[in-house]
Amino acid sequence: DFASTGLGPLLDSLSAPAVIPGRPLTGDVRSISAWVKGEKDLHQMTLWARYRDATGRYDVAELGMADTGGVWRQLTASLVGRGATSPISLVSIAITMPPNLASTVYPPLLIDDITASTLDGASQVVDDFESGLHWSALPIRAREQDTVTLVKDSSHAGQGAVRMSFGPGTVNEVRGLYTTTQSLPLDVVASESFLAATGLKVGTSAMLLIGRGTLTPVTIRGSYRLFPTLPGAAGGSVVFDRDQLATWGETAGFNDAFDLVPGEALVRLRPGADSDAVGKALAERLTDPSYGVPQVMSRQSQLDSNRRNPLIAAGGSGILFVAFAAILVLVAAALLLSLLTSVARRRVELGVVRALGVSQWQVLRMLTMEYATVAVVGTVIGSALGVVIGRQMLGFLDVTETGAKIEPGFILQTRWDLVAGGVGAVLVLFAAGLFLATRIVAKTGSEVLRTE
Image (cartoon, rainbow, N blue to C red):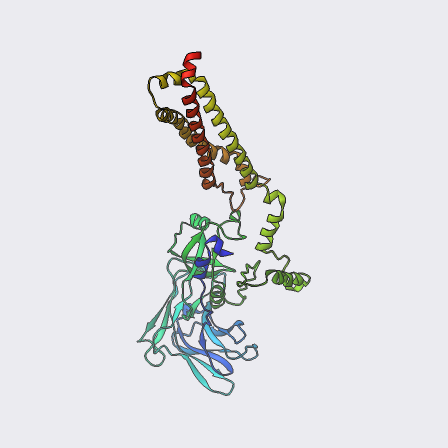
């Protein structure tokens, strides 16, 4: 239940409608083509068309080498026999290089007139770059990133083409350009330990390496100290919207699928749902090994179990409450006894005061001033010492049996309303005792002077 942790609104802010990336293609596509112009220094670069079919499966098809001898050449990737289910969408043009090359500075690459052909021989324009730029460069592991710009003076046909300029990145990463249908950077929330370790702050942007090497641009929109089932000892953590992350991972990936296999699922039921029926249905699935759910836990059932446990329900706060009530009774009895004993010892003194003309109410004010000072000072010092000593004595609850710190941490809370009520009850009893003592002094003042 994220509402109890304050994470609900923060996580809801990350959610967005599912995005179907890419440039959609109609019909039963047979091939994807692009006009490319590259210098001979690009002879070790290979271009690939990455696409998404109707089932959500991503795949790549080879377009050809980037080295076209400095002239425009049409590169074509065949999709025949690849098992793609129509309709498909082109999501990116990936560029790969052999992993054993030395890093160098590469000349720009020009791309124009991306088209697709169907089995019936029809041709459709995917992007001719005449209506603006709708592509961006994939991020690389370098401070100076690759860039994609629209040029008007070096096109294959028409008035526009794209120029991809390469930054000094590494040769063992996928480069290229992708369609900008997905909003980047992705919004995330991060743990405070992650921010402390990286030096990032809420509102800043960064690149995170996700999965098998996919660089993911993110913007940190919020932070949290604790997150359910993510122990702080395991290090920092970052929370994504799963659909957005999966979409970007497949768009920027290559051959390997960007699998986000859940290790656990936190489920919030609708109001009024039968939680017992849901738990029973999930528990029945545990017998099926293909389902992959080894354990189902219900927050409500755990709370109910704790309430039924007499060592928990009657322990802790219950025992402390009983102790608090007993101490109040003892304090009230001790204070009242001390007051009456003191008045009994001072009978002669109070009798002299009364004989000198001091009224009963003046005696009451005098005794109130004396004992109220003691009561107020004792209450303040006792409350402060109680908090300090309580933290020291109950500190063992903040660690496990092995000495490791528990999460969430133990919080010592003082019920100040109960403390105020207890102090008020003691003060009422104290006032009644003062009034009784004053009455006793008033009745026995003259007798004391005659007999003692």
